[in-house]
Length: 226
Picture 1: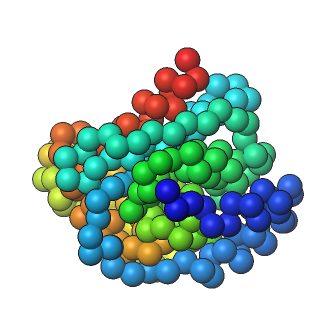
Picture 2: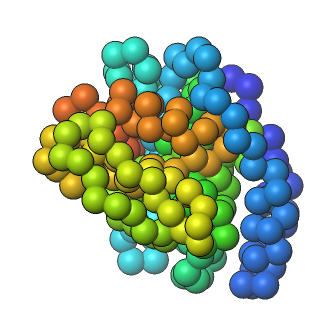
């Protein structure tokens, strides 16, 4: 499989150690985010998630067939957080382990779906955007809770949505994936636009609130740490 992390070796060499270094890296990488329509042809999608057990973490990437949502490949890694907990810099804790898991895949995903946020971030560069830029794969985030922004009430029917607004800018969408069930927070990451991210989220939620990609990756990383 063609490597999915073209900056992998450079990333290992230069991972930031301080908050100031991380902010500088975040600012540099943010300028490389590309907003474009979703890929015209999608065969595989990958869910990425991380679970914690004390000072250990388990990172999982699960690749699903986009047509029938069957599992095509799974890769898991046990490691430790790569950075202290700092609000707005959470991705720096998890990205190395997730990149390690991506390196182990034998099926290259067409799109990455993160359990987190993309542009719906204080500096418009959450986990989904970070991973998307480093891999140059289309990516977006589906968060269970809001990180930033405000929104008008969302209708109760599957597919209803409301713009997520932060500082006058639309940074995501609050999307109802099941009738009368709490909505999710969708935001574009890299090489995809918000409309495409919402359409894919609905395609990936035929039965549950969260995308099947997220559910599969969550199970895999939690099983890893048992």
